Image: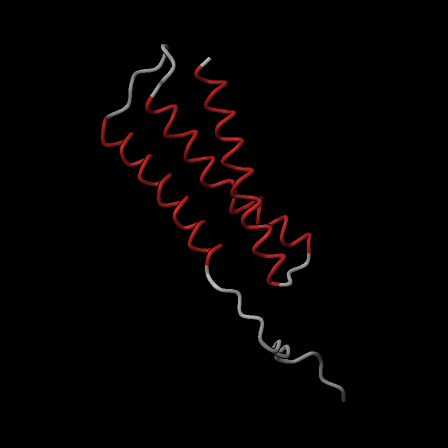
Length: 108
């Protein structure tokens, strides 16, 4: 039962992270496919470290429990990833003039 609860919460954390990154990138004017990809790649980190920290805190019976330092480290990494996600998505969006590409191609 604990495993199911951990995976459900991790899924909700992933959905929250993906949605925040996706919405932030769409507001910046990014293409939807790129916004989805960035949302997936950056939204998976908090969920991933939540799963690691949860299984370290509540290991299955057949595994030996990890050290306290390991458990604390995983929870701290999880908190840092959530704070980083919040920081990235709450920064103001500056929509200035777009810069030109350095060199498109030389015409000889």
